[in-house]
Image (tube, rainbow, N blue to C red; front, side, top):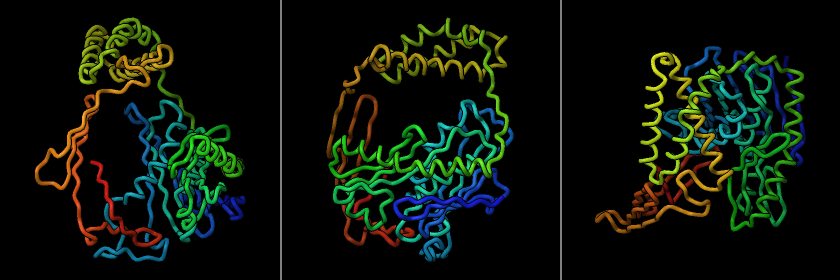
Length: 378
């Protein structure tokens, strides 16, 4: 059944439409704010994978036609891998929805958000996240939502929900807040020398402002939602869990106290190998389950060390950092170079100075941007 629901956000209409597009998907919606429109479709396989993680894929796609633009590459068509903006937006969608799938859900799931129209005022990234939640809500996919998302800015001391692209320029706060009915689940963004209290106020302002969007999704689910598929996570053998805990808990605790990461990892690896040998052939067919129990036990003990003993797993205090060292000018020909070391983690930074002709030119739906500073994180 085709359904269109609307609500007002900062004087503009935000609508969610379902039942009209992508009917083969498990769930799909079209979210509109101003003249910015995003189609989100979700689908989940009915065949369970043997992986020990949630096989969730999130894709966010910006098409040139959405802003009336022809791609500027030689072929004049959408080609190549996702842009930096598309990759970062996909991560913004992924982070808040991933924890809301039930524990043990191992079915291949895809969330695809496509920008259909862009009005040069309203950014589509928040609409994509709202659409992902709404599409999952009305589908048969188990999902503990809904969640909503807004962008918060502060202009001349006043908080504003979903500031326009032009207003970004004068905003000293620019954050994306995602939340459920009862709390905040993700914050992304930053500010220009903003106090902690002001940032918290912005987050709570965003959470309060998104409630009509959450209510709209709940109503949409009542009207157009389908029953959730039956899902029962794999039940672990309680006797096996008790056996592994009794044999390895104290040894895991000791291994987690080793300061050096490489030695700590080696100790845990040896402990796992030793455990498999002790369990013998009788449990050979339960290797995946044994591996999962062992990893969960490491997490449980690590959590207890942090919460009860108030220390990190390598025996450091919360405010104690690993040894830091910095070396500069370590390469003779590059314009600048440095080696940063913290504990066993190292970063080699190399800098090159160029002219104005070397500026990066990035084609977006808003227009072409020129970036004089480029950071490549490999």
